[in-house]
Image (cartoon, rainbow, N blue to C red; front, side, top):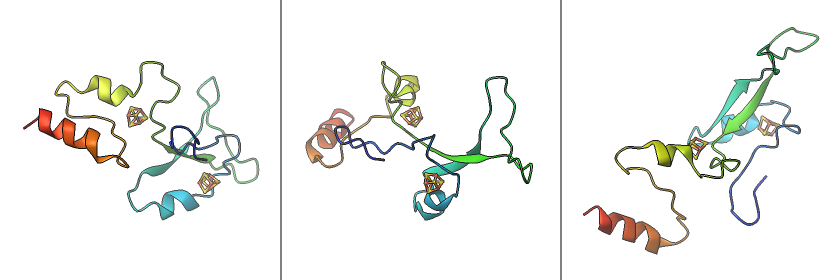
Length: 99
Ligand code: SF4
Ligand code: SF4
């Protein structure tokens, strides 16, 4: 679901049934299906098939991290920046800084 304020799309883990439709549909390969584990590190498995249960995962802009996106903080070359692409000004300013 899309957060109305930030615009970030987040996967509602408790609602996702792992059908994979979103991962197949995303043209940017931005959504992946991943196995899920309990607190002891054990795989959740389907009771009928015994196959690992998968759920969708994607970048959530590190929305639970007070310090913001971890990838941005980790890049030693300042090559990563989060920009609202609905506004061209921040992107142009960032590009100007690097020219
Ligand atoms: S895998 Fe994707 S499309 Fe399927 S229920 Fe989960 S979020 Fe929805
Ligand atoms: S580290 Fe970057 S790519 Fe990964 S979830 Fe956080 S913001 Fe998204």
